Length: 214
Image 1 (cartoon, rainbow, N blue to C red):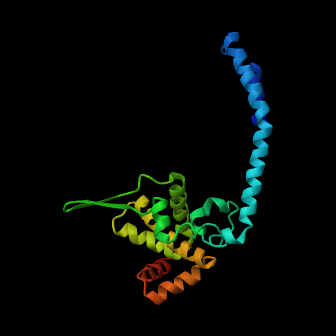
Image 2: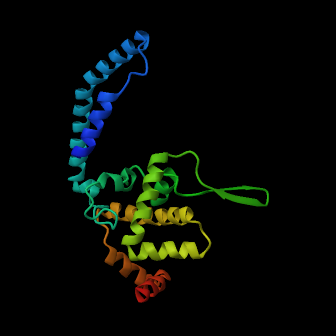
Image 3: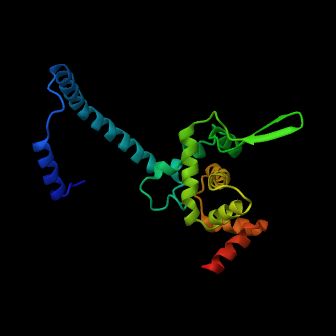
């Protein structure tokens, strides 16, 4: 990123007029050495980043891995596909069912009981980054998918908070993508809407109402 000339001049003046906060060599010398060591590590770090970028790029081009999610509303046209392609969705051999992914990722809630009491809470033991990826990805599909927006509104109308509604949407998306992963079929919005129509899903009424209001 290019720094504006005005900002560069301002920064140079600040450096020129800066005053050292200490002249204690016991502080200066160790930090000078630290900067030199970090500078020597920078080329190694940059090469490592290049290797990671190359690996990510190769996985993006692998149809067996990303064909499932590359056509979803959140991913279409987005260069950051790995961010919205949780690996568990495609790895159907390791996860026998969509429910297994929901539990593993921490999206599926936990129901506990004691005597006549029952309570539900979210999973504490799970890969937090994967759970957050699913939740953020599902939330990003709301303005891009008719049925996702309708489902989110439906959950909110039932009294769910924003975060609970998005988690519920992520729960539903996982099942859809898992099925796509089983058949190695890219997700298609029109196909899924047709499936909802065949099942007589109440979501279609919400979608129709939303279409009338726009």
